Image (tube, rainbow, N blue to C red; front, side):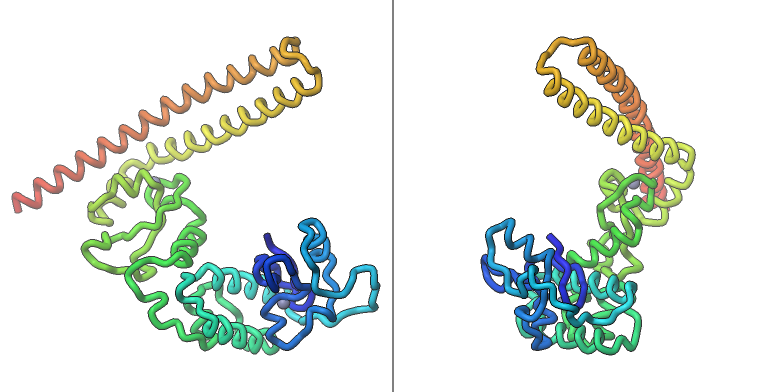
Length: 302
Ligand SMILES: [Zn+2]
Ligand SMILES: [Zn+2]
């Protein structure tokens, strides 16, 4: 749940407005640490939110149409970048987010907000450092933290870098067992299938072997998309069926029969598509595994 702060205008997670369990404030905790008082601000959105939950709203009653309240002057771009940084900060490991660190971070952000002397890059480690935050031990340890994973997924727009299908597995190009290397250059995004298939294969070889299968990979991507579309069509038809049944109040009626017929047709298409899809997966799997086995034999022979 994101709510807009009446002063800084950032859309921040609910907990930034929670003074206690059932009390929410008109401005975010960041702005409160500027010594601004929630009681001096209107915030219709938070007020309605509080009313819906029967929580207490700390702020000016919305009926009071006061002329205008002060607002932090940030460009849309700066607001976006700052919101994203705050959301990323929230996602950092909980153990790292001590009260002291959070307070220090808030002070740095406030200083930046009042006088943005550089553009935020969207790269969390870089931005934190430039703001002067002490990030010792946060990004250079060997386990990948949540933020890094999220960044890799976003950077590659959820696309597997080996086959082009949907992917959300953050993958080490050189297996971490060999290199312990968590630098950005050693990270890429893959789908679960490529992740499993690659296993301990050398990165470059796995890339090359996939390159040799370009036409097959294009078919894989097309097939995955077709399956998604068919699933979506089926969902829509199921919804139509449910709505019609509700409207007519009967189970047998020509219109309902027609929708059921369509669902059957789509299901048939889906089964056919899926069977083609599985065959392609199997083909690629066998090809790459055989390449790998031959390569291993050559290694032994050398
Ligand atoms: Zn605020
Ligand atoms: Zn893949």
